[in-house]
Image (cartoon, one colour):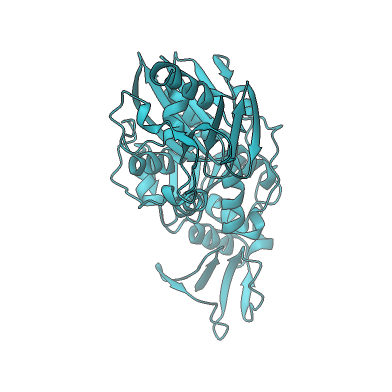
Length: 197
Length: 197
């Protein structure tokens, strides 16, 4: 069974637990997919899983990748830290809301657009408890601490499930957390098992 | 006495308590200035106040506008909310550190750069206590709540002094805060009084 997760900046292909980044869908094979990129039009031989998710939420317009990531979690906070960072809260199988932040790379780009004086290198070896004492620290501190505080506030007494490229990094800041890189594919497999097998 | 505060995106001219936004320095008048824009070269008839600030800090490379804004505050958190949001902490006349976040406009631009699906309108009528239930709320929530939490954490038992274009908006979220739009100019006036009168 081949699965594709087509996001804003890249496409991931999943087969037998193995994930690869690809440039496009392979339209010569059969596959299931979720897609949030409006630019992609050709899904020949692919089955869109979007209509099959019966997801309990009052949230309007939630991306299908976010729904898939939440779908296998009954209770917890789901954080997909990629080009954007999405944060969703599941309580007894109900999605009670969520929010979207710029990802780490977007912060870096954002600072560079404000001023050439704010061009900096991402430095993941940052201490979020010590007040910055130079521009490099000041920019890295905000880049990591803003998402950290936003996640912390909604994760009181909840387990946090991280996925996405920067998920493993953020998971180090939270004791009650796990990094499950294939959360979207787990949700896709669950819905296939429920509705299409 | 004419003062100029030249920032990353605009130049402010101050005279007799009145502030106007201008395109450039008026090199035909005498003036005092602080400047952080590396593109500006011609300061004829202007006196750069940067060398006169004797500012107690271990922070390296702090913008002179930030120093000026902090200079008139003995104790407190100084937040300049403009194209970037700078946050600085003063304790008994000593600057103990600070950090820099993207401003509200930079967040909006940052989301738009990630995906066309994340283009949204800034909506200052946002409730930061209620979990978002759609994309518009999800983006506005992060845009305002991330800076809010970052400021809140360093402002425990401290008065907050807001300045900058979005300072008045953020000041509404904090009881122990004031909006002092001319904080940079107040610092400039203080150093002139101390060193140049």
